[in-house]
Length: 77
Image 1 (cartoon, rainbow, N blue to C red):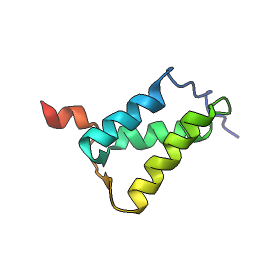
Image 2: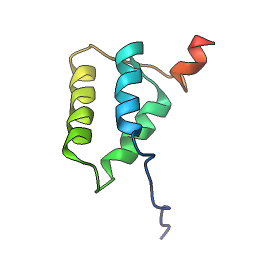
Image 3: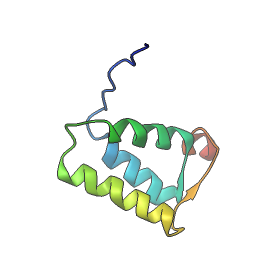
């Protein structure tokens, strides 16, 4: 049985992800991996959990698009 290394989020990562997705209107592959890591993080505060919920609702409602781009920053270059 393989075990995965612990996932540690960078402080402020959820807020930055939320801001970037709000500006760009898309969730990239890197954003989705960040959200996946965040879901497994037990130490998220209520604001971070609400931000994740808002991102997921925005995708569900079509306000955010899912893209196969690795990063929104690559698109700006």
